[in-house]
Image (cartoon, rainbow, N blue to C red; front, side):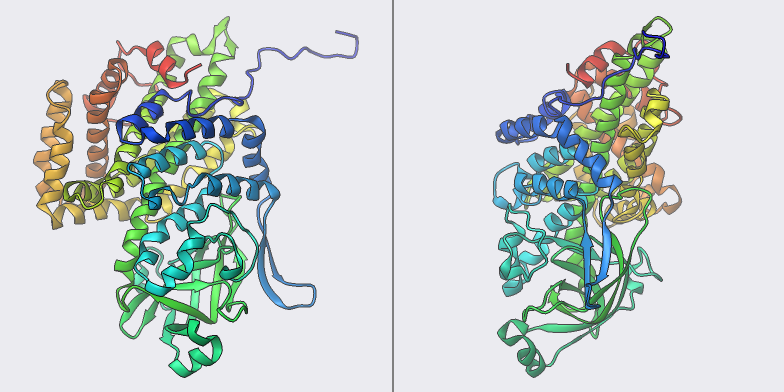
Length: 554
């Protein structure tokens, strides 16, 4: 060093980048093959390499450091309600749409939900805000497929692999995005408390304004407290019609090419998910089109909600995987007290515990996705009915805790905004809140159990596939199954029940499919004893070195 240099920089781990996110994840690759999407492995491998590239990873940082801006009016004072995004956002959206993250399951291939789930797990390691409009666009398809001429008009552009951010009527675009607007100030999750009103336009008025495309148009007056992705080409909303709460498609542009009267009041200033726009809006004599029967809005929207809840599971599992990889990569490249951080026993305990949580989340998410692939199979439908809300509850609760622990592994380097952990930590809570909070999910589990003995039977069959290989898991399974009938009426204990269901399914999947080092440590730390407390509580005998070698394949 010369006389002006104060120190030499050394013992700093490199960033986790320029790595194939698919190839380094043994559990994900095995799960894709196991759950019926092996045909997608080459595409996922190529995507994993692209998403792990340093330049693309940095787009997530740029998009979050430059959040969207609302422009209510143009230079002449005309109302435009335009949202301006950083170029990094548009590039991320283009990657997702061109990869088919919104469309794969609707293109007819067997195992396509599993393939898409793997894609989503990969993208969740890069940037989470852009997943929101893609999720809603994906989830809107089942409802719009039942919407006759309205669906026929919109679906070709919704399923297009062209990302087209231009503000134009849908007929002039190569691709379209769909958002959602369900909650209002006074109701939140209780959408039946919504006050937004809808009344059908008379045939003569509708025809005079929009010609033949105005058939079935409704007038919408009211507000939405959370209006997700206001830049989308249309939104599915709930409003009170004469027959009761109903679902409507509200486009940004009307059939005559004019802007719909959806007024964006402000963008939300959110803890995380900052790259994505969420808004408060008012419908000032806006126009919407009925989706599903009048008065059946909640039933119409339930299928969409089921798919968005699947994506909350996938998003949380992706965040956990990202936090784990950054922490483990750091620990392998960092020396402390004379040896590599990742080789020290207590740190190995922490890292291996994080790796178990992440692998179990991945296995559960892919198995849940296969339930969505099963079509009309009644047993899979019943299992999906339980596992979707239970999984959304438990995995979304585990993500913030895991992300916080991973940040601590990296110390001060994890806490600062120069790296990705601070952003991941801010992002982690959103999936617990969006699409139904934890309590709402646990009550949904109770409803599923109370309504159908077949749901309990489907869960039993799934758990019994693990056989008697683990005495602790067998005992846990039998206790859980014995409690289910009584538990269905125990609202007070619903959180504990949902947690136990997910852990039982995760344990069964790992016993069947994971190496013994993973399955045995998971059973010992989460089944044989209560799951809880900080990470790093694995009992003696866990093969931490083998778990960590599998967790991030060099």
